[in-house]
Image 1 (cartoon, rainbow, N blue to C red):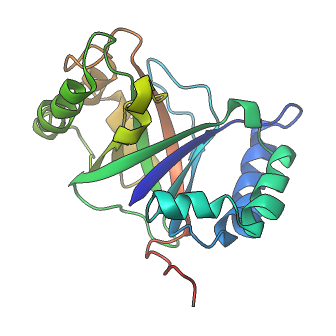
Image 2: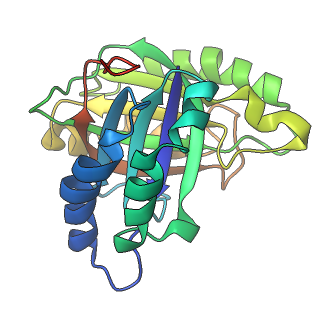
Length: 240
């Protein structure tokens, strides 16, 4: 399955509050979730929590689950996308700033604490590998050494670790995705997330050179409130 991350920012003239309101309660509900190939869909709204060394300058992240590349290709040809979600995009998002990243997700520890009514609170770390490190070495180090370091760190209030590696096909032909991995570290509430981010155990992982994966500029973060638009159970496809 493809676990897609889409980073979005407000169109010019739209405030942060207006962007969040339109995205969560109009675009996501009225347009995006109607695309039939989307199996699950989450809206991650940025929340301002101090202690982040390098915050990524976006306002939110959509998480979308699709079965495979064929379903993904079919999704952008549907009327629900072309006449719905795509047509609506200029009303709320700066499309020229949007970043999409297809990943393979690895559930390392715990389960998503959210459900249809209760949100997930998490910090998301976006990793860019060292320039002289091969993709193969980065992937091995990330899924083995780096993950074990997080597990052994005893980060307070940490209830879930999700590790997402950029799809290998994104490197074909000498290509390079905008990020090489995304790490999700979740807590049970905003208060617990604030405490987790402030802890020295978590702060160590905000240093891009921690773990030997990235250079000094290679990790940026966003703290979010993560809410299901479609899920947590996957919608069947094809639709009945």
